[in-house]
Amino acid sequence: MAYYMMVALKKHDAEMFAKYQKLTAETLTNYEWTPLSINAPSKMIEGEADPDVCVLLTFPDEAKFDRWWNSTEYSEVKHLRHNSTNVLLAVGFDGQVLV
Image (cartoon, rainbow, N blue to C red):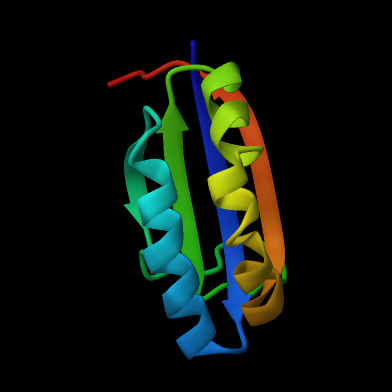
């Protein structure tokens, strides 16, 4: 079963966040993942969050996601996200591709 990671962020340091994006993309090259949507413009339909970055990725399963999320490569760049954004939502979940 596929595993999805959905993140909504509010940037407060665009330059640092751009560096985070570049380095994070490099960390993902050795892991099986598919970007479903990255940095898509968003519109709040319900709720009070006001993200300016939305990301939806899929991995073959949760174990493969965990391998990347807890990897040394990603651990070395995660601080850039912490220092350049406020995380409004970060969620992982199992699902099936329905299309």
